Image (cartoon, rainbow, N blue to C red; front, side, top):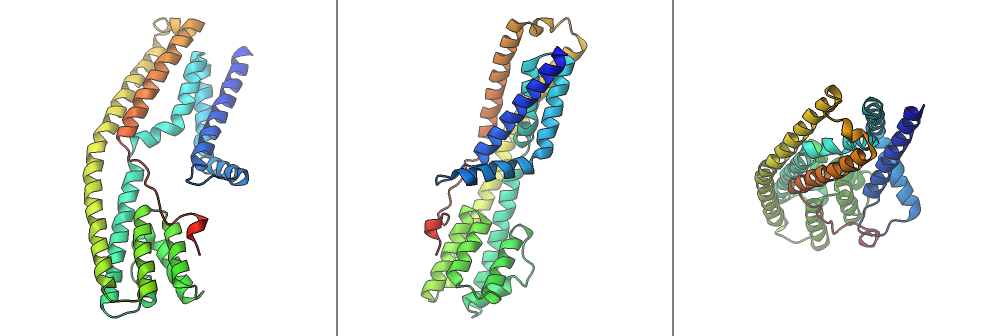
Length: 286
């Protein structure tokens, strides 16, 4: 009965910690977030990751049931939603694919403008061709706002930038807004030059991502060592018996904190800092 109560308490603690972290991540923004939006962000994050949260609770309960170590149960429960993001470079690869799509689309727009089409016509026509998948939704929505809804070009471009939600997308949208305002010559040359800068950025990011993959390999090795220790803990109970005492749990907590700090540091080495947008925020919108 005591073990069952401890398991429920550990599961509740882990679930609360996961939802608290999710709330912090969902409410991070450049401008202060009002309480209603913050709670909406927490609910949205919890909804998206409810399966991972359930797996974390199950893994923590199983760990506590098997070992009887509350510290190990908490560590396993928190590791389930965090470690997959540390071991993969999926976010970086998706960003690179998105930038490649923006570069191709911008070159196509430059060619259309160079052929004598007006900006709105070029934007609408760009959605009728094969649009790269990472930006297909925003480009299609932009074309629909211009052709069907007859929305002002600048307002449609600002919404387009919000849907892209990318600093490079802001640069492209800002260049198109300037073209829409001035209606002068040379727009195709500006877009072509901007596309070349994006292509160069993509090449640099690929090189950086290849170097950062080494840090993720180091993280995998560390996790492999922890996996060996876990097998020993399950098979050789007498070897790890001291960790079952209160003092042993305190020592284990310190060890877990050291490992967590090292893993987080390696993760930071393998990821890039978030770039800031400049077309976001209500004061930027018409």
